[in-house]
Image (cartoon, rainbow, N blue to C red; front, side, top):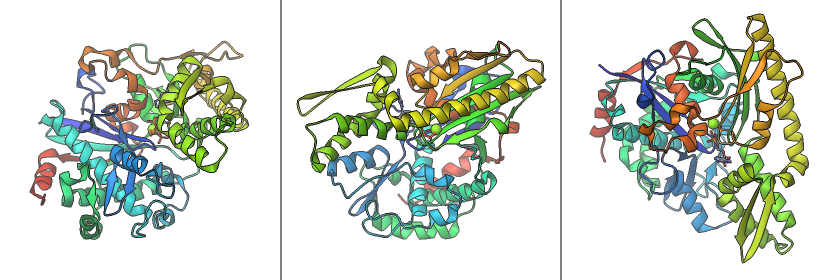
Length: 461
Ligand SMILES: Nc1ncnc2c1ncn2[C@@H]1O[C@H](COP(=O)(O)OP(=O)(O)OP(=O)(O)O)[C@@H](O)[C@H]1O
Ligand SMILES: [Mg+2]
């Protein structure tokens, strides 16, 4: 019997997943860590990242990269792909938010509530996970699998209540997936007629999914701690994704890793927010784009290339792109001068200083002399994040040591160079798969893999 653990990281911009043998925490072996190729069916983009997007078309619904491509191809200002819908899970009245009708720009047919679209996306994600597991030579041999998902630990929100809602949404998604199976992965999407007949059946029969919850920061700490002889006793983590920037501090007490909840901050400004600042700055400076149409065209062009623009700005301090025969340049200094960015940076540095104070205080209490600092998520390389990690502290001890976002084992030959470039984004799912049960915020059970697979294959195609 081979027991594996799977962790799904449903992200604002990209979903990720990884699997590891159930005993990986105590017997760590890099080649057994399996980040899953959720977009392995696609020929463009990184195979480990699945775009979190849904597009409701004329007679069908498209998912992931196909959804984004279709929305771009239509170029219709009134029609949009649904993206960043994970942020909905942070609202205080979650049930009400889920039961709201999708806006007209997202669903021109007026048939879907936000809940339906999230269930459909999660079904697509579960099917992508299933196919990626089956395609992985090692994971395919698993006979039993325990599952977790990673979520931010909302300070004001009711995380336990949110967990109940999410396991129900996953359960509905699984029931829907059992009815439609592989069709979810079709590049042409799923016909509305299939959805309207299968979704009500799935919703009526769904049971909550047996899936555990790990807080994102805890998962980040798990990956940082595993397999390192010099793993520290105290750790501060900054995770800048697309929707949120999370700060958390952790302490190792004996064999356990505990979170120091007073240090935790979740900010609703992250990659998406930086994207808007950049796009607005460029448009303001583009004197030749004064009409509404020119500006919205430029906005779309920028948004399509935004990841690459940020990568250059973060790494080289500037980015240049060509549009309509004109060169557009943008520098990190321009961003740093922006009023919204300044306000965000002020909050971020205060939150980091506060977290650091909490974690250093705990280190002192436990007689420790070092705190490690690490950034994960797509924004890990941002100079303003790296600057925080390396900032001098007024008191010399406990000293703060910045760790690289990508550990040495991510360069192992086994991964053929594909893992290291996206490692900061995959850190949560990898850590979540490695973490022992006692690091979970809520536990899930272990299910036999064969039974799940037989169900799916018996379903009508
Ligand atoms: N090399 C890079 N340089 C700069 N930004 C990047 C890079 N790679 C990804 N990003 C940005 O990181 C963000 C996505 O990161 P990540 O996958 O960690 O987010 P997420 O998990 O989807 O979001 P969240 O955790 O907030 O739900 C996007 O804003 C993307 O543009
Ligand atoms: Mg994330």
